Length: 316
Image (cartoon, rainbow, N blue to C red; front, side, top):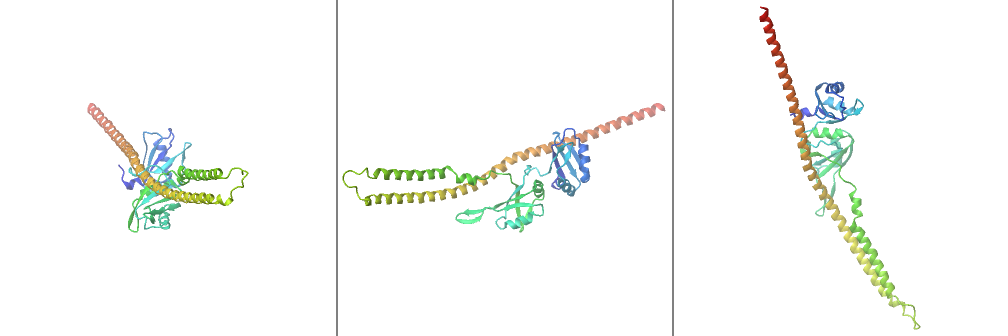
């Protein structure tokens, strides 16, 4: 298998035409630098290009998109087998994030390419406002992420940053939480309470005046005050309950994100194992074809030598 230093000079090419051969691909890529090896996998739509140095890889990736035989190639730097092979535009950072700021992180990764955003989530934990211990940095190009992964490990303030690829998660959940069934139910409860109080006042209001004089209006006022105070109490209670539900929703969202990252890392292990086996199989297949060609050449030369000796002896 190739070492991590040689991976920095390799490129994975997808979406190749079925008529393209390894020689044609090598001729196309040779204009960007000297080629060490170029071959196609069993899947005819994929191939690997290995340059002599990383500067040739940077030049090749900077000249995207590449077109061969009318097909636009999907080019990606080769990464270690234990890394996520999917192309993304964000990285997930753990480590000494609590001691850093968003500007320092953005300045550090600015040498790789244009930084679109850098966020360090913050919030309340145990009644204290603190960092959650992770950060996200987004770039404008997927190739920048692969280059950062190849240059691992990264250090800031003599402390290592744990960097991984960040897949796109479901967003805009805060809007859905604000329109959750609990908030709608609380709103309907307050409306129903107002309707019930209105109906109660209508029922307790005097009927059409009899021949006797109607009761004074002061007798109805205490009932109205009582219903108003109870309504205010229920509204305050519902607002307090709604505030507690919002805080609980924010904490549950944070725990949900952490659990999702753990599950996604476990699922990515299976994907990485598959990529590892695929690369090992391609490497062994190349070695086998190389050895078989060498044996075939040796046998042909041996037969030629024996035939020459026989001809020479017969002439004598």
